Length: 575
Image (cartoon, rainbow, N blue to C red; front, side, top):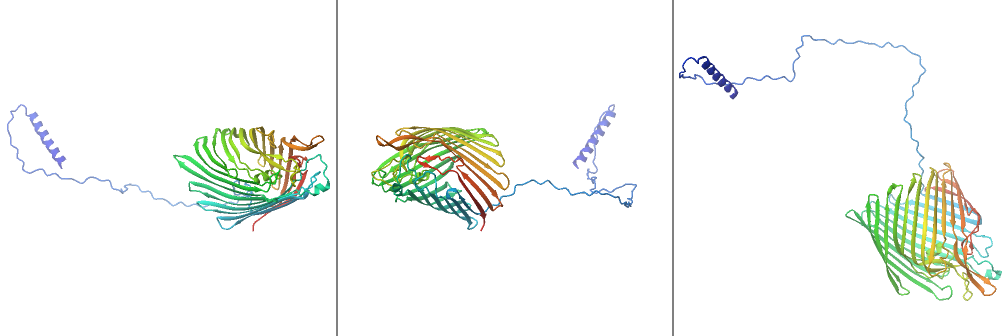
């Protein structure tokens, strides 16, 4: 309304000005304007576009219906189209896993091998396992004058349980071993009466009970504890309790790991080798190992130290030790070249059980001392040359105080025992420094053929003894595994052990019995196996041990069996 008022006002002003222009030649006078009616503006309707406009075509076209028909003419044809199919990817047949198996084999020297394993599912989270193994031989080594039979029977029972937050395991192990001290020194004439007076049999009895706990969402990662009883035919007794716990805490994105451990050993031998005096020993080891794990891209660095307290209760002797626990590795070229280094140490508990497993011909007259390893420094590199060739090379230098060395026992005529005719071994302790170089190659020649090679060279420096007794200067092995076809499979392994030093007692025309240092020859042991699978459950096998037929001596005066051949079968099943 204001806009219309403005327009009329402008029109009135324009009219007056125009009148003034055309009347310039006349004198201007005063006039009076009288408004009869006031201006009353009004708003007219605006023009709007309709939402649905009406078509105003003058010509309207009407659609005409289209009529069509198909003129079908039969055509003779022999073409038959086939449906398209996607190309299938060939998949290897999934190997069915069985919860139980049994193996039985027989071989030369009346060797018998028997194994039985069973995994029983109690429920979805609990399992009960049974493992029974037996390996025996009736002997028959050439030129051996005493009984050389042996057997080893072991039973293991375990129970496992797992849930979302934790898992735990308990086990019970029982073991019975029989060996004979058949290694009489060569070069002597033994009468039948003397041989019949010796009973070279030694029995070992072992029982183990233990448990393990693992927590998934706790600073306590794992906890283990076990107790082992070990004894023999000569009433020797040993008790060994071990426990450890592993704690891990994440602080500022760094992992702090702490291991707390204890190793308590107590045992008794009825007599020493030269006297009838008993040997009692009690060794206790307690320690804690904190460490900081640093992960930086390709760098892995572990900085730690072990604080260990050792107590010899029988001799009232105790010591405190600090050992370095430092390791580092760096992926310099991805998986192809990874240099690594370390400086580690520790206090190792020596037990009668460990000695008997490594050398079953030890006499029940041993002194027990722990081995102090101040440091083991090593530097190496590992990685892969190609996707099918992996390598590992390492050089190390290690110092050990009170390192246990096996040494042939001399003849004891004052207090003769069945093991005191030069046919058993004792343990001596020495401070030994060892330099070694290790190399390993693993090759996947084909998808079904794998080959592994490794070798280690040793150099020893002993402090008190003439030699580092019975330690080899070189060790090497070659392992091969070949899946010939789906049914046939084969494998082989070759072990080489270098020369070792020991002592031997011999008859001298002047001094009677004399002692000299001897060198045990190096030896090669070749083993192979061949098998055939009839189906997923039944397979047969043939094995050969010491196929080169070398009558070598792993320990002085103790030759091994010659060529050994065994055949048997394995059957897998479910209850």
